[in-house]
Structures are given as structure tokens and as C-alpha cells.
Image (cartoon, rainbow, N blue to C red; front, side, top):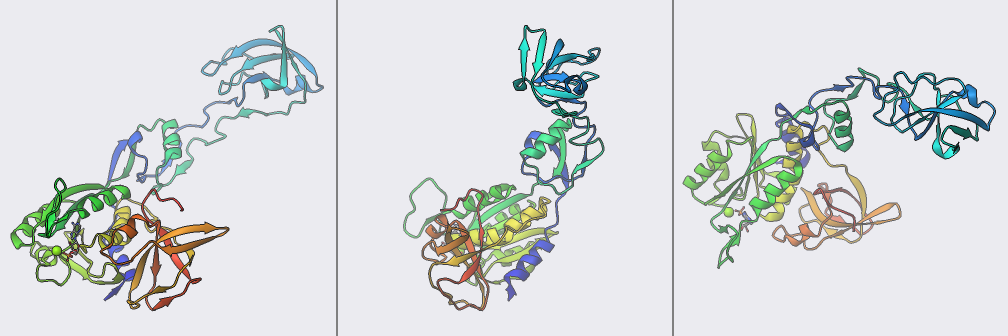
Length: 406
Ligand code: AMP
Ligand code: MG
């Protein structure tokens, strides 16, 4: 049986970035840049004032206080052309306005006193170049400011916008087909009767796809017979990625792997040394990833988190596809009956001083969803540890996008 690390590595090797597309800048936040970006022009494009104040010549202010004649006014968006600063004079200037020729400093308005509107008094010494933003000082034309692979956040949007980039090349987002299987499932809309449960996995997995930044396509439910499986799986295989839930264990109605093989999916592995999630299968259809996740709602979400999410991120061009791990101290003993597998505990986290403390978020059986809702993070216990004592340190990572510390 593959170890957790081997399985994830195998998946990542089979999930290369998809192609790229040009999209409008406003839609690009969260996406990954597919090309390097260099400045098309100097930023700023001309010398300008960093303050509301007066453009002056330092030589005129060598011995404060000094009194200067106000000979002009340049607002933001104004032009400095034809407005030279003469000896003994000052020009009133607003933040961002172009500097008039002859000026070598700006004195903030707070450090001046205007008398009569025609004269200004400067009380303190003035340093050459003060409060001026020089042409190209932020970014000179031609400088590479973002490499391909950069995740676009609002600061990147800001810079791309300032370069006039209305369209940006980014990696494509995979369309991820989500399919549940099982005769016991009903769709939302009525109260389940005896033997029925609401199909929650489809929406949970679609939500997880969306959280990862990809595009879910809901295929619905395949019933526990070959015809239904064939029809629904074939539909799902049209997408960039297929994620199924349930029907992948060793039960006599577990048809997913059998029918996937009939449909030309090459199985790469089945069964991984993890708990929950052992029956997870991974295959490829013409190079496109196919994930068959177990049906228990906890198992399907955890295997999505640990296997599918990193793969989707890689397909979308991300370099960092695995969440950062940190150490937390266990608050309680944890018995580990499956010590030959990596065990994922759903945990709460608290921070005290410099340290994080982990406590389980409730009963860890895979059938119990509440632990998932109450968990801020997942602790991954490597194989070989049959017993963990309160005070032991464990590796922990957050999951989900909007989790805060308790
Ligand atoms: P299976 O892998 O088909 O044996 O399913 C394992 C468990 O997961 C069973 O208790 C199922 O009822 C449950 N399950 C399967 N599919 C879903 C689903 N789509 N939504 C919620 N629970 C499910
Ligand atoms: Mg089933």
C-alpha cells in the first residue's frame, strides 16, 4: 500500500499546469500569472510632489525663516510646463502634481505660513530632494516586477492597473466534475425517509472545489448499477478533472473503479496508508486526473483536502500547493489503533503565548461530521505512533479558507 507521501507525490506528478488564458484584470485576483511582467514605462512617469505644499529651491531657504513670493499653483492633474520656479519664489503644489523646473524640494504646507496669499514663510531648514517622488524611483521602465507564477492579490492588481494592463495572462482553472454514487442518496428538497440520506457530498466537494479556486460542475448521483455508473461517469470524464465519492471500497456494490476502467481510465493507485480515506483511488483518462474518494463525508473532505486540492492548485499554476505546517502541543492523550497509517485528526487550536495547543474537535469516527465543522485544522500523525500523550507535539495545518483561531 502506498504511503500518504507517495500517493500525494504521484498525484502531483500527474497534475501539470493546464493551459493559459487572457482574462480581464478585475477577474484576475486569486489567479496565477502565466508570464513575467515588466514595467512598460517609468513609475512614476515624472518627478512629482509627495505632499501638499510648496515647490522651492533649497538655496533660497538656506537661512530660515525665509520669505518667498508665491508665483503659481499646480494641482494634481495640472501641468508644470511653462511654469519655471524663479529665484526667491515658491509655487504652491498638490500631492502628485508634476514638479516645476527649477524646484529641488517640496515644503509641506504644515511647515509654512502663507501671508496675504502672495507670500509664504518657511520656518525650518529645507533639505534638497525632500518630499519629491522622482521619475522611475519606484519602478524604472523595463524592470521585471512580477515573475510568472506570482499569485495575483490586490497589490498585484494595483500595479498591473497602473501599467494599463486591462488583460492579463493567467493559468486556466480546471472544470471539476463532481459525482456522488449510492442508492441511499436523495437530493435536497424533502426529508429523508427510512434508509435514505441527503446527498451532501456533492455540494461539499463542489464547495471545496470552489474554495480551491477551480470550477465545479455538478453531475449528480450515479445509482448502484453499471448503467447508471457508466452514464454519469462518462459525463464526468468530459471535465478537466473528475471527483467521485463513495462506491470505491470493496463492497459488492462498489462499482466506481470497475466502470472507470471500462471507460478507459487507467488506475494509478487504489488504497493509501491513511485514516480516514484508505480506499481512495487515483487514475488518469487521457492524462486527466480522476479521483475516487470514499463516501463518508469526513473521508471525502479530508482526502479532497490532502490530495485533490494540491492537484487543482498545481493545475492552476501555483508553486505552493501544500499548506504550511506548524507544530502544536496536544492537550490530551490520543490512542491510534491504525498506527501503520498516517492519521488525520480534526482538531481545535488555541494559542497561548508563543505556542499552539491542539485538542480533538470531537469523536474522530469518519461517520461523524460535527468534528469537521468544529475543527480549525488537521493534525497529521505519521505512521508508527500507536499512542500520543498529552504534551506531545504534532504537525498541524489549517484547512478551509476562512478559519480563525479559537
Ligand atoms: P460507501 O463508500 O458507498 O460505502 O459509502 C460510505 C458511507 O458514506 C455510507 O454511510 C454512505 O451513506 C455515505 N455516503 C456516501 N455518499 C454520500 C453522499 N453523497 N453524501 C453523504 N453521505 C454519503
Ligand atoms: Mg455506496
